[in-house]
Each structure stands twice: as C-alpha cells, then as structure tokens.
Image 1 (cartoon, one colour):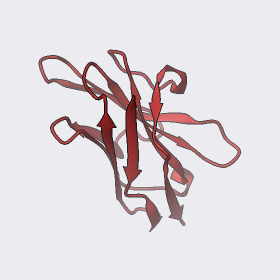
Image 2 (image 1 turned 90 degrees about the vertical axis):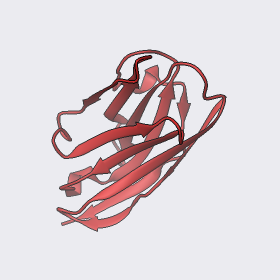
Image 3 (image 1 turned 135 degrees about the horizontal axis):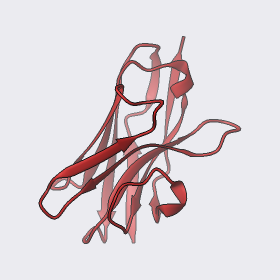
Length: 127
C-alpha cells in the first residue's frame, strides 16, 4: 500500500500562484507514474498533470490543455514528494486537487488508471 498526503492548497486571487505538495509513504518501491487531478463541484474528476521517471532518471510529463504553460509537475524521488506549481491561476482552476500514484509505467491523465489517492487539498481562485 501507498499512502499519499497533499498540502499547499488555499485561496488566491486570479493571476496568483500556489505550489501543491504530495508526500508519499508506505510501499513506494517499484515503478510508479504520478499524477495530479482535480474535481470541481458537480463535475467529474479530471487529469491535470502526470509525470513518469525512467530508470535512467529522465522525467516525462504531460498536461491537460487547460493548464499547459501555467502548471508544472515535478517530483523529488529522494524526498518521495510530488509537486504541482500553479501559476497564472484562473477562477476556473477552483477545485479539490488530488495526487495519485499508479503501479505502471508511462503517462496517463485517466483517473481509472491510478491505484492510490490522497485525500485532496482545496484550491480556490477568486476573480
């Protein structure tokens, strides 16, 4: 089992920035893809960003079109922590943000492909 815990959410004005963190614990050995997802009230959970690190320690990332150029996903494997730097935030970015881990290689923004989930951290962007 892998436990995930998000932090860093909060309330900001449009145009502001936040950095989310996700600390992993438990059985974190092996190959994992990691991702950030969000869910706004009344909407389905959607993929925001995903990252996969190769055995050669090269990171590959992918993003939802709605956040490309504004959000950056990164990971510190030594600290077992995943990050999401969010810049130029918009009111439509308001949602509960979740980190997730998948026991698989490759990139995916599909929630059903992830095995482990955190409890979420709320991000609210006001206009």
